[in-house]
Every structure is written in structure tokens, then in C-alpha cells.
Length: 305
Image (cartoon, rainbow, N blue to C red):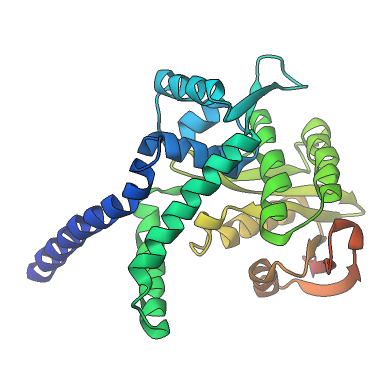
């Protein structure tokens, strides 16, 4: 009991210190024309590529009326544009204009400069110790603070899955616009034609916010294809990717599939490690210059029988 009280005291002390630290980091934002909440909204729009007002409010825990005022200001200042969905006239997608991207770059530069100033006196060993400690804290307390959940997909998940596959892989791995066009075709097709008895998709959420996806598609002859595996950068390192894959493989076994395969790119090293740990074997590779320079596609296979 005494040890626990001591731990609580130290955690509270750290919280006070960290609150002061984040206050220093926020000064770079407060020196701009944006409030802290406005800066978070602008950042989220830039991350999501295309989003709706409801998605932004849910992700950032901002009430609808306040979010509406922020977006009206952004629209008035030429930072965002709204585009009506081709599938549902009631839905309007929000994206940054060039002026909005410029404002976001300025905020990022200011924040990066502040952080660089904070760590400039650390040597490589000290810096790595800080990063390792941050990873430990994040891993140990993520489930407590923001429990992760994995659920079956809904039709309303289409916009998240499509927009993040289009933007995340382009941002992280430099894939071309041809890849974006490819997912524009196959993801809506999966939602439209999904056989719910033999196919499914799962969405990972943290605090009600979608952070990843995975799907199983029927490839014929008792073979399933694992598709649309994605995990947001901030949600990695928590074991969530492994849980998504394990759930998908369990579905395959219960459905009666005898073989599973997937197609990916060689740059996804962490995902490759997860596949290998579940028994997948890399069976084929090929270069695909249409998707970008030095892009190598891989096929992985797993027998379930």
C-alpha cells in the first residue's frame, strides 16, 4: 500500500511537470492567430485528407456548435473547402486549401522549432532514453486512458477507410496517385458487394475514434484474402495490429477457409513481422513502378488446414 501511495504521488508530480511542458509547447500556437482547439482541428483536417464535421467533432471531443463556428471561420478565411459527397448529398467533405496547408506548415514549423530547442542539449543516448520512456508510458497506459475496441464495420465507415488508405500510404511511403485511384475503386466495391456470411471488415477504435481497419474477402476455392490492413501511426506499438490480424484469421477459420493470402509492399516492415509471427510465408515479390519509385509488392500466404 505504501509503495502504491508513493507511485501515485510521483505520477501526480510528473503530471504537473508535463502540464507545464505542454504549456511551453503550446506557446508556438498561441503566438499564431489560432486557439489551441482551432490548431487541433486544422491538424486533424490535414491528417484525414477528407473528413466531415461530425467526424472531426467525434475525434476531438468538440461539441457540434463550437465545431461549426470554427469551420465557418476557416471557410471565411479561405483555409478549407467543402465538397458534396457523390454518394450522399447530405454529406460534405472538408479539406484544406493551399492557404490552409500553408497555415498548417507554419504551425508545424513553430512546434518543431520549440521541440528542437527543448532537446538540443541532449546527446543521442539521452534522447533515446527519453523516446523509450515515452513509448513505455504510452504502451502501459493507452488501454487505461483510451480503451481500444475492435468492431464489425458499418456502411458509414467507408469514408474513413477510403480516405485514410488514400492519404496515409501516400504520406508515409510516397505511393503515387495511381495507388489512390486503385483504392478509390476497390474499397467502395468491397462495401457495396460484401457477402456478410463469408466476408467482413473490422474497425479498430480508441476512445470511439477509428484508428485502423482490416478485412477478409472471399477469393474463391476456400481461399480468403486479407485486405485493407491499416493502423494510424499514433495507435501503433500497442499490440492493436496483432489483434486485428488475429481476429481476421479467427473469422477465416470459423468460416471454413483453408488458405489465406495477402498482398502488401516491402516497406511495411512492422506489418511483415506480424504476418511472419502468425505463420505467413513470403511467397512472391515484384516491382510496381506505377505505384512509385522502388515500390516492391509482396505476397504472403498461410495454410489454415
